[in-house]
Structures are given as C-alpha cells and as structure tokens.
View 1 (cartoon, rainbow, N blue to C red):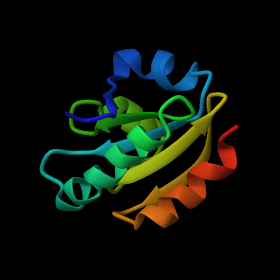
View 2: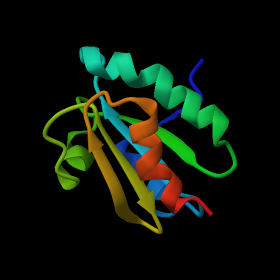
View 3: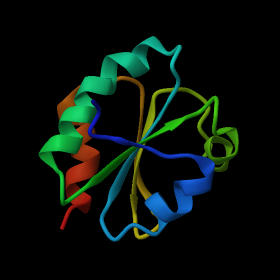
View 4: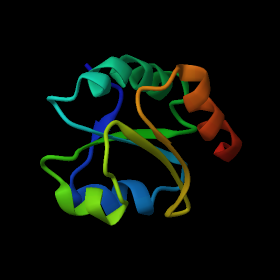
Length: 108
C-alpha cells in the first residue's frame, strides 16, 4: 500500500493548495514506465517525511484539467507546493537525492 494519497481534480485544491504543510505532487500515469520506476522512491519519501511533508499522486489521464493548469507536458513530473504555490519542479525519474534537493529547502 502506498504512503502517497491519490488526489483528483475535485480534491486537488483542498489537499494541495490549502495544505498547511509542503506537498510533493507526483503527476503520473499507469502506462508510464518511468513513473512506475520512481514510485518506490516517492513512497519512501512519503513515509520518511510523514508529518512534515504531504505526498500525493495525480493520474494525468484521469485529471487532465489540473495537469494542464500546471503545464505538465511529460511524466513523471514532480512538483513541490508550499502555501499554494509551486516552489520546486523536476521532470523524469530522478534519483532520490535530486528529488530531496527540491523538497528539503521548503520543509520547516
């Protein structure tokens, strides 16, 4: 079972934009090999930073409007939101240290 929460267009604003803690958003799709490749890393981060960072996943096929709103053109795209704004973004299945380098500056 994943530590990341599935978010839809209906719940995105409440779960991400209105979150009191920073949020890592994983824009992904079922058919995406690199998305499946980075999923264990995203899940590890969700477990390790629980209480300091919220981690959510957005299926781009089922949530095209929110994906377009944030300019997601390729997946996986991972974004860090803080206070309702994008403060970090990385494209592709990057190594964990690279992903942490965009997350950690925004943790309190």
